[in-house]
Structure formats: C-alpha cells, structure tokens
Length: 134
Length: 134
DNA sequence: CGGTATCCTCCTAGATACTG
DNA sequence: CAGTATCTAGGAGGATACCG
Image 1: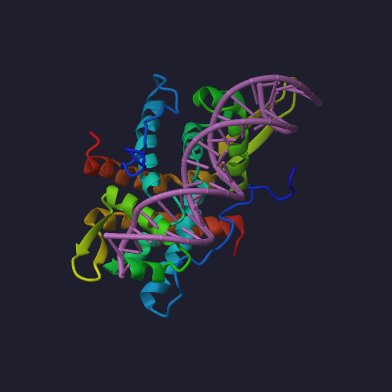
Image 2: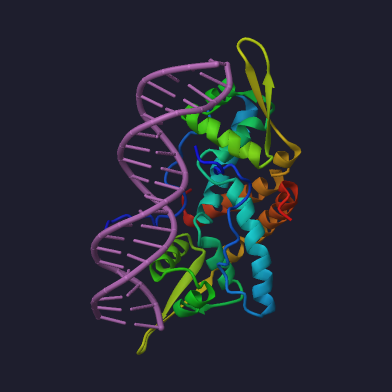
C-alpha cells in the first residue's frame, strides 16, 4: 500500500492553467478557478454524488449503501467512502460486536453541499431543455 | 473516425445508480441526481472551466486562447471547444479571409453558468478552510 | 458484515508531426 | 492561423476471489 494515496483532500496541485497576466479580469478569474476546481473535485467520479444523495436521508451502513446503489462494487464503494471521509463530507463509525457494523453519515460540511447541488440541479434542468433532451 | 463521437451533449445514459424504491425521499433524490450529473458533466475535464473563464471577458480567437491557456495543446483545445459548442455553451464563428480567423464566444446559456460557478466557488473556499489548506 | 487483493480494460489526456 | 492524424501512457473504474 502506498503511503500517501489519493485520499488526500482537495485537488493535488494548483496548476497555473491561466496566464497570470496583470489585468484585473485575469486576477479575478484566477481567484475563481481554484476554489471552483476544488469544489468540482470532491464531486468527481461516477459514485460521489449518488453516495452523498443516498446518505442524505440519514445514516446508512455499508450493506445498506450497496443496496441503495445496486450496481456499485464493494471495491468502488469502499474506495469512494474513504475519499469522501478524507474530504470531511462523511463520517465513519465502527460499532464493535460480532459481526462488526459500520455506519456512514453526512457531516455538516457534507450537508453544506446542499446549496451547490440545488444550483447545479437548477442549471442542469435548464440545460436539458436547452439541449432538447425532452 | 467513429460516427457518433463524444460531442453529443449531456451525459450519455441515464443509468439508474439509485434504486427506484417507492419512498418519497428516494423519488426526490432521483430527480436531483440526473440534472446535477448533467451539470457536472459539462464542466468535466481539465480544461472546460479554464476555457469558459478565459472567454468570460469576451470573444477570443483560437490563438488567443492558446496564449491564455499556455499549457494546453492544440489538440486538447480543439477537442474541448467542440464539446463546449455541442453543449451550446459557446459559439464558433468563422471569419473568411487569408488566413482564416475563428472566434469563440460564450452563449447566453454559457453565461448562465455564472450562478453555478459562484456557488461552487463559495463552497470551494469554505472547503479549503475546512480541510486546512490555509 | 464489511471490507482487501489482484488483475484487467477502457478512456482521457498528452506528445508529436503534419496541413488547407 | 487554426486546426487534424496518429500514437502512447496513465489512471479511473470494474470483475472476481478471498478474509478477519
């Protein structure tokens, strides 16, 4: 196992994708790019959003999540949960016993994604109409 | 060349990643997942956002974009511009002459991403603090 | 029950060279 | 100037089997 896996939070590097020219507009753009990239990063991948939505109604166990997301593999679910935990969006609680139970729940920080998701939803609906898919 | 490339708008399939159980909560979740996925989809990749931000101040030509995004390759820029155009976020205007000029500009639909981007930025800034990267 | 370990496949992104 | 053609590498995601 590698020592520092992908579970480190946020985006890996602040790569300068826009030239740092000395115009105010460009400066503003630069201040937008990084935070937005960070936000998009934590939602990246096929399963982040489905998992977060599945946890929205309340705490769920590993097995309950696999039922809620019938096509995810155990490996993927495990991997994604680790990343979400590393980004402080969910908590993982082990309940000792035989067999052991593990509960996953949204953190306040995870819940705070609500506004972002609503805004994405609103735009996504407009986009569907615009593009003509129903 | 394949006949139907990736330039088709929105996400390829509505894959049921959440079980359609008969609870109201799940129904609401299903209505959130698809539009949000669509919205995230059009911003996906390393260059979508930088290109959109580079076009925010106004129309730019291909060469101007390569200068604004110094590390992008021509191939990548060309590919991403096609996808953005297919998603109706930008327009492509050919100005005949020798040599030919091509101008790219945001559409109203592209500009309408503003609210989404601001919301992502706000959350991204909070996320950086939360995660402890300054 | 709640995962790991291995192996594999495809897709994205990039490098390089060339063109109307 | 504004791209296209071709090739390649790396990583995300997936299948399957096994484990404390």
